[in-house]
Image (tube, rainbow, N blue to C red; front, side, top):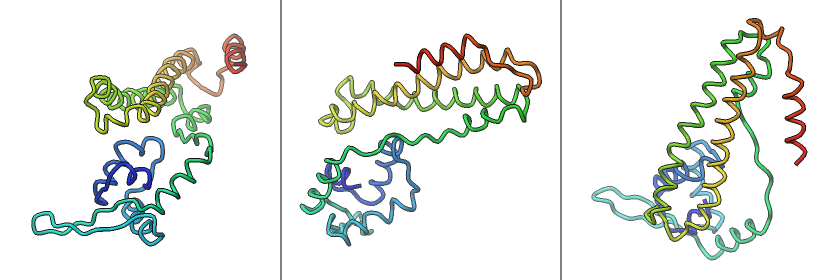
Length: 194
């Protein structure tokens, strides 16, 4: 939130929309928690709140304080932890021997569809920035880093799904009877040795 407030001032609604549009892909949070966070930042002295009139309705707009900029700078100085992977389809495939081959193929197809759907949004944003028309175009150098990561992530999931479907298609009807292709196991080991 402090990072977004460092970009510009936002209402709580705008902050939640921006989180969903940008940071939500890499740091998902429940919307209810997002509505609470700006008030916590104000209480900590990291943000200031100002009430504005929008028509006849008031709205609160939050902006970062100097103390908030200092806290943000301290946080940015720490390298942070690596990614946390949560991938329900992969968990289901881990126990595929308790279902059917078609269950596993549908699960893989759903993973590929997810990658395609998410990449459609990603592609639109990439084209906007490449044309010089992205929101916050002045921050393109920073947003490009996340865009490149998600481009690779979605492509990786799609390639993996195609490969996994080929593997599962070769399984017998009962997945409990499936055996791993030794050449594929060797290839995975070779690729892991980077």
